[in-house]
Image 1 (cartoon, rainbow, N blue to C red):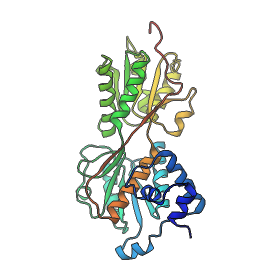
Image 2: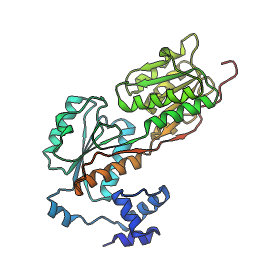
Image 3: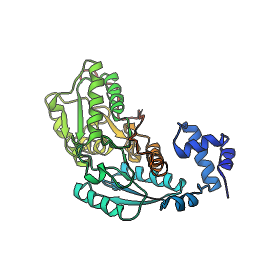
Image 4: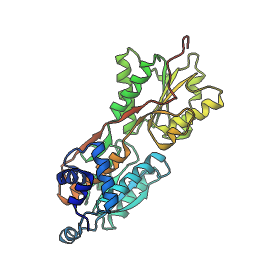
Length: 333
């Protein structure tokens, strides 16, 4: 049976570095992380947690509730969480709330009865959604992708991501910019828009109310881009707060015989796999979904095993991926 020293030797790193990777007690670089994961896969290494399970009466099972597994972003997060659980010797029970707050609470209650050790939740998005069981949980809970005040969460730095998108578009010379905001009640949407607006202020720019479309986090909301494009002075660039909305906008722009990026530049958010399928591919703010999932699992396991219930908020830096859907503003546009 392989040991942590075997993994370290295979990866060319110190055993303590491998330990940090599994426990999350210290930051491990992207390159080092890739080497460790390759070594783990090659050696088939699994942490030996059986003795600890007996001593602590743990099942080594984690519950995960997501709002919509059909959403490619959430599906990719689930995949990364599942991979991290497998590496760390935990099983995963997955439940889909269908973006329904009542069903979400029912699922939480049901999973609690399955003798799970802890819970990961991507909640439905309302800022005030804090059920009694979530605020005083009988087991450790870590929120993923969205924050809840006073409880542990692992998210991307959405405010910083909004600033990246605004800096890119303003730097290309765009002055009339629209926002496809999605659901304004979702916390990470608010954070992205706040960062976007604050960065535009650095360029002496702002986005007026008529240039903002609210709705839901869906493809259909993206198609509402038509209401921006029929304004007397339509935007020359658009920021969509997720890639699904951006793809909906692209679809409608094609129906309107408008070209991306020649007639309108478009930026999304999340970097789902489909963002590369458009022609040209979509410029987007990428969330590190693999690290988001891994850090969530690592933090939850720490709360389970070490009984560390101190609320911790982890922000993972996003990055801008510039592809073909954005271009310099055309003269006279």
